[in-house]
Length: 90
Image (cartoon, rainbow, N blue to C red; front, top):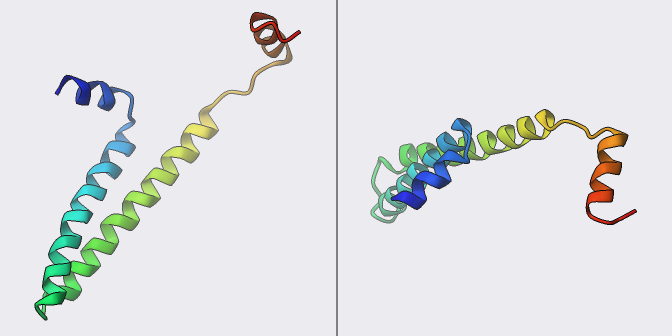
């Protein structure tokens, strides 16, 4: 449980929501698979829920990645030179 807490500290709230949407979507997918194989009338509804949850998790992950990329500050010339000297590149 301690390792799980460390992982959650490094994730944003959007990533956590996307993760749980993905897991719940996969569980709904198993239910949809059973419903399709048994010709149940609930199959289309479960497939719709499955598709919505998986697509939602993908969209949230893409949004979170784009947001993090946009928040990343650009390095100035002085900072690049300082890092290059630190790693003996120049």
